[in-house]
Amino acid sequence: MSDITPGKVLIEGKTKIIYELPDNQVLLQSKDRITAGDGARAHEMKGKAAISTATTSKIFELLNNAGIKTHFVKQHTDTAFIGINCDMIPLEFVTRRVATGSFLRRHEGVKEGYRFCPVKSEYFYKDDEKHDPQWSREQILSAKLQHGGIVIGADEVDIMTKTTICVFEILERAWTSLDCSLIDMKIEYGVNRATGEILLADIIDSDSWRLWPAGDRRLMKDKQVYRELKEVTSEGLEMVKRNFEWVAERVEKLMPKPQAQAVVLMGSASDTEHGEKIRTTCKSFGVPCELRVTSAHKGPDKSLKILSEYEGEGIPTVFIAVAGRSNGLGPVLSGNTCWPVINCPPVKADWGAQDIWSSMRLPSGLGCATVLSPEAAGLNAAQILSLNDHMIWARLRAKQLNTWVGLVLSDKKVRND
Image (cartoon, rainbow, N blue to C red; front, side, top):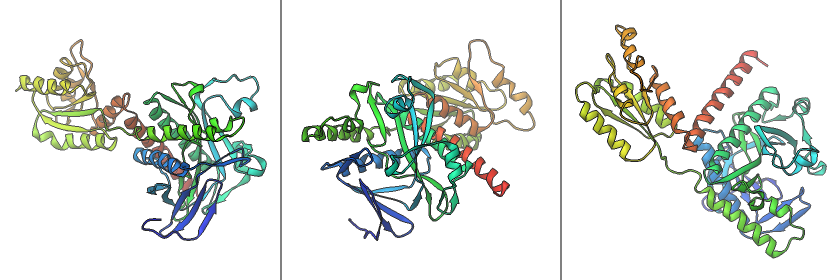
């Protein structure tokens, strides 16, 4: 176990063992074992533990990087990772984009391939003897489940449901970047035993989703292949293992380096503080951002030269013009590039009401937008660039989720439930 000594076994399941560690952490050790049908079908598969750990570690790293709150700390060995010690909530949260599998059996008349927009959310209570029955929201609330010192009530169910949809959408866009369709997905949550915070937990690997390359069911790479084997042979298990390896190799490509940038062009060095606020916001969403000083009035040739330098890089770019008084910078940039231009003038109290019109009252044929807050300018740039960068989109989506969760928790606190 490398440099740590695992404590007592907290729980042992069909495919993993969880050991206690100091500092409210646990070690999740995967097994070389694959199961289906609540354990009715089970086989040894050499190498599966390493494949599963590699997959789940990269997926959790992506989600952590986006801003989703998870239990994942770090990968420890090829077959184990360290996580926060959580009191697991015995519910599976399922998100479906396409109707297939058990959904068709439970909803007669729905044809396979029916697309859910928005996605379909379902809940299943974890009980092997009863084959994980589907529960309604009302059943969950009526059960008054207690975990980690909290009762799972309406707010908690709403937070987990909203988070589940967010996680699905983030991973859906990530897989789409590799021409793979995320069809459906199941995840679980736990309550941090030290803080009482609900965290995305357990494992996310090829047992957690249906994944169809090019949207073609015949090419599926998930555990459904194992489920559908009429007879499990060594050749069949090898095929399933190769599918899992295919997924593990591709999750490495789900967090590419940014292929987009924002450039803040300031009319004067005195605008640097304003520009730095824009850059800080851009970087919080993973958008590389550079500051430049140039004046469209005093040095238009230099302004256009800087513009052409960035256009020549061939990287999707948003230009943000920071110029007060008579803002010629933004309109000049907009009139000489096809990239988006955002005006963000450092408005002052004395002449602000008059100065702003030089950013808003534009000649025909120009399309630069005007945003007053530097934070909003950085956010706007990130939103534009997220159209072609799923990781920027993921950070935006997670920030929206965390803002929503914060409001729900604040409301619960003042209600004093």
